[in-house]
Length: 306
Picture 1 (cartoon, rainbow, N blue to C red):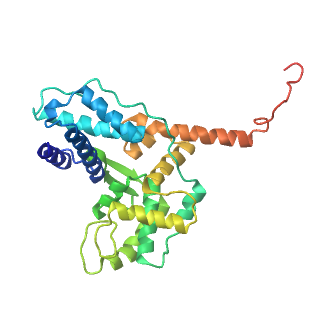
Picture 2 (cartoon, helix red, strand yellow):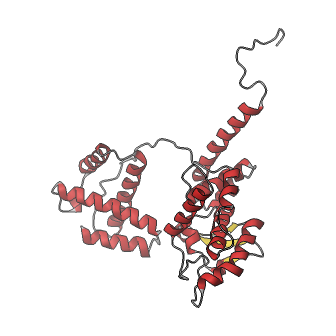
Picture 3 (cartoon, rainbow, N blue to C red):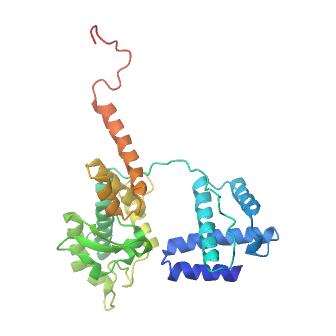
């Protein structure tokens, strides 16, 4: 079973061009599943049936695994079995007809505009690292990039004159992301004054680099944003995807069309983008209750003739 898993992981990396994050999570989920099978004395994937799968899901629930994680693990197993069927390793798929657990709807969190301003003011612009940090925060918020997309950016993908970035997102889908003048200005300062000092005598096509002149990895980007948020005194957990959430929410709050936001985010399905409309409705309700003179009055009797 381990040999088949290794082949599947190579398939994810090479043929599916899955992100390192997806490969890592799917590998971890499937190793957990295979360990469960071994504990039950199941020595072949051909022996797996619906009863064994239900037992596995029941075990996960007993371990306190939340619904979102259950759904992800089941998605990993589904993908694995589709691969097994495609490679004709199996002739039957035990997951046919198995549905994912219904997840609780959670609204994505986001930063307020004031919090974004504080975050952007946190980097020390007198240092090369500060110029870089300001530029990458500006770019994520301005363009709604995923952290994986940001880390993979090369210089040739950036056009400061048109303020556009060619991005390869999930599934190697290409899209054009946009940025405003503040982000373009921050990038120009970084490219002129910050990046050359970080690069030194080395050569690299990567847009964002570390002090060793090497490409900045995703985890370091996450750490940079966490450190800047702490320095800005923002009392909540701040991470790259939160800036992406904020990008979408603020666009919709500003009246942007949902399908335009879908295109800018690189969502293949409109339903993935629609979650942000719930956030903006929530904001609209708060504004309404605060602004409308009669919204929160209680006990008022309608006057005669009303």
